[in-house]
Image 1 (cartoon, rainbow, N blue to C red):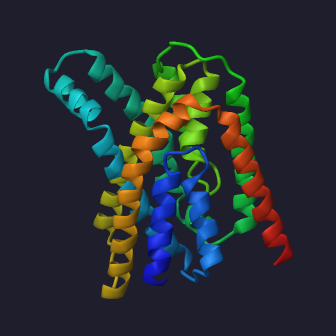
Image 2: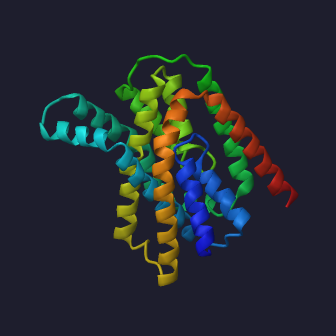
Length: 264
């Protein structure tokens, strides 16, 4: 992978992480178009690093929320912050289990399987279309909702299934407020990404040569900067715009991906 390719993919990740259009799916499409020949394990490592960058940008944008949560936890009281933190922990369980027991199977799917990504984007489009039909409410995410949303997040580990699209759609279909669903969706992934990076460091999976490290660094920086811009600008867009717009986009991109793979 060249430096320019890494920068392009970083920008793609940063821009698509906060929209319900599957950042992982777009990364796989981008890799295929750019001719990335990385083995599945290396390809997944690059994807994880880019997600780590956008997780940091999420912390920067939501720094007030994160600080409020920590302050509430340090009071050692059963307050709103403690309840919200428990919901985040509950939502992490399904994805954590999938990551622990099915990591090798997931790695294979991150090797440029464009046909698979295309079909998953069609599923994302369906989820967004169904969520668009749901009425907006003032309801907050409950404990049981947290687990169900967590299952959606686990399924969204597949390339082409939008994590934010799946979790926000599931939350909205459960009757939760769209704004609160979006906030919960963006915050619930941060601990998982940091956990994944920590696991890879402890297992020795993140061991790259000088060249590979420079490529990862370029991708990380571009994804972080693009994520800052996208998070501040596009979160508002997600909350205010109809999800059907994104459903149409995912449907078109998924269809193009399937046709592209079939023709080639």
